[in-house]
Image 1: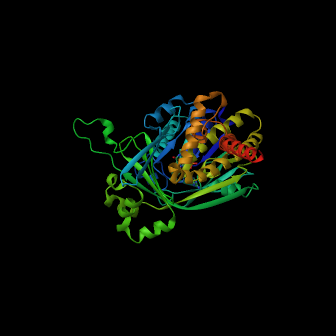
Image 2: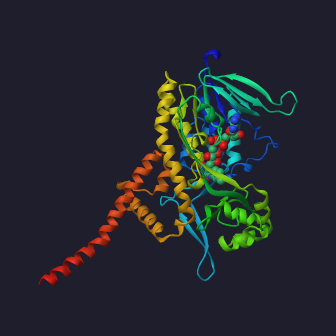
Image 3: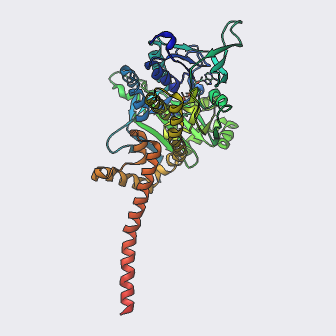
Amino acid sequence: MAESKRQKTIVIGAGPVGTLAALYAAQRGHNVEIYDLRSDLRDPSTIPLNFTKSINLALSERGINAMRNSGRPALLEQIFKDTIPMKGRMIHGKNSSGELYEQSQVYDIHGRSIYAVDRGGLNKTLLDELDAMPNVKLIFNHKLTGADFKKNKAWFEVSGSTQSDRAREIEIDFDFMIGADGAHSAARYHLMKYQRMDYQQEYIDTLWCEFQIPARELEPGMKDESKFRISPNHLHIWPGKDFMFIAIPSSNGSFTCTLFMPSAHFNHLETNLKSVPAFFDTHFAGVTALIPPSDLITSFRKNPHLPLINIKCAPYHFSSSIVIVGDAAHAMVPFYGQGMNAGLEDISVLFSLLDANPTSRSVALEQYSEYRKADAHVINDLALQNYVEMRASVVSPLYAARKWLEEKLSVWVPGLGWQTKYSRVSFGNERYSEVIRKSERQGRLLSFWLVGMLGCPVLVGGLMAWRRIQR
Ligand code: FAD
């Protein structure tokens, strides 16, 4: 394509979603510029991402599929080098006689897994892939501060080490902007001035803080997998009624752990740091044997206590100039492990519609907003609901019974197409809105059968008693 005819696509945000968007655009021959307010995360002096984002994430089919469709076959291979399959949840607790127990709940009767991935590692792989493309420019230390979506101009504040770099503003022309600048998106803020966007945001009364289970030092003769102090192939959960502690494995043998808890409990522990280990002993049985009490106190004191935001908005675009994707469009609480996966899926959906409408980007974007809204809103709601499931329902017999029955039906009567909601969300690519429709239908059928099974004997018994009275 002649240089002057190439479409100029600028991507705001070099997180996982922005970098994948840049890759899709570059594969289609656009001249791509990707801007991020931070410096390159591959530079060791960059502030580590774990100050703002969980280090380890659960990568599942939707995210994998979006990378599979990127047209870069080596990408997934590179990413999978450093992932660990997690086949289920491991529930930790204490039984009535005070003994610690672990209970494995596999995610999928067909043996499929989700994958623990280092967020920074995944992001670096995507950046390396972009570096290798001649039509991509990576531009760091540039913060989007303004945009005119009628004239297709954007303004950036340049931060740099030299005096002349500081607080300098530059103006950029573009054909198409993809806003992937996260939950507090500047692209979304400026888009709102052009589009009648519905917008809803909610902070849930839960904060999160990160901890680490260190790897075990290997002694001579020990197998490599002994470096993991607990099973590496599970997402570990210590459920509590109002709070929860989870652990996700890393390939070096450590686990990234997250404490989720209402702010009042954080406030209480902040005033009495010494009580942190005792709090863990009371609520998260066995954790103090994995994380030394002094480390628990240090992590609680040093690591930030961060909020969780849920954002729904629509439409996501204006004319043919801009579209927002990823957390910028639908930040969600992390309890379904879908935030990044849904964001990556946005890119594959967006570009399939752009490909289907080669002569009108505005039509494609219109279709994208219309199509994606239903799915994004559903997964936001499911993520909120799953908090209750993870911290409480996972230990309920009713929950276990429904999971057992649904899984058995999927094996015994495959023709029914029966699957658990979790499997549909995490191991498939059908639309989230379709997942919820099918899952609700399954729920109604199960209730109907249950009432039938319980109700029939009662009805028959009643009829027999009535006939006896009549005689
Ligand atoms: P971000 O990762 O937020 O990236 C946005 C980028 O934009 C950043 O690099 C930022 O520097 C840049 N930026 C911001 N403003 C500007 C500006 N004005 N100008 C230029 N650049 C800008 N998801 C999962 O799928 N699985 C999980 O297991 C999971 N676990 C999670 C656990 C926790 C505790 C949390 C908080 C989230 C979790 N998520 C998970 C969600 C996941 O982290 C996000 O959905 C994902 O990071 C969103 O990616 P993004 O690229 O849209 O945005």
